[in-house]
Length: 125
Image 1 (spheres, rainbow, N blue to C red):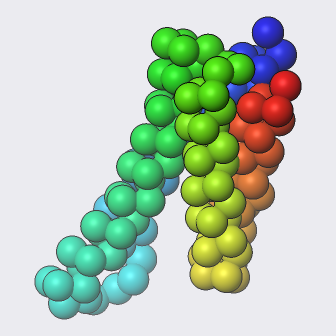
Image 2: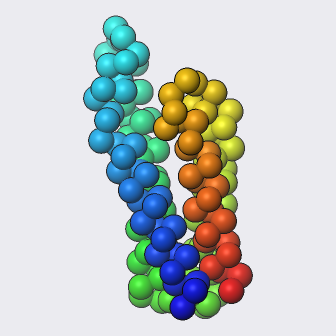
């Protein structure tokens, strides 16, 4: 029961974080000022790709929790893999976006790490 709660909480948090990453894409890209068409497309692609990755991780863990449940080898593999990816993304964010003055960008490594810890704890229970 506790593992499921941790997984549901982490899934919801990271999915919403991903959606909130995608929604302001137009204004984020506009904040870069005048860009070439190629640079505009690349920044848009990368910004949305990170948001989609976060949504995918959240929905994958959620689906695994609902369909398989915590505790099986397969489910734990999914939870540990999702946590590992979030930790890699948190480290990358800490060295890039978190070094800006934008508060949500500064929070990003902490949110990703928090959710990774939830997934690891749930898999360990």
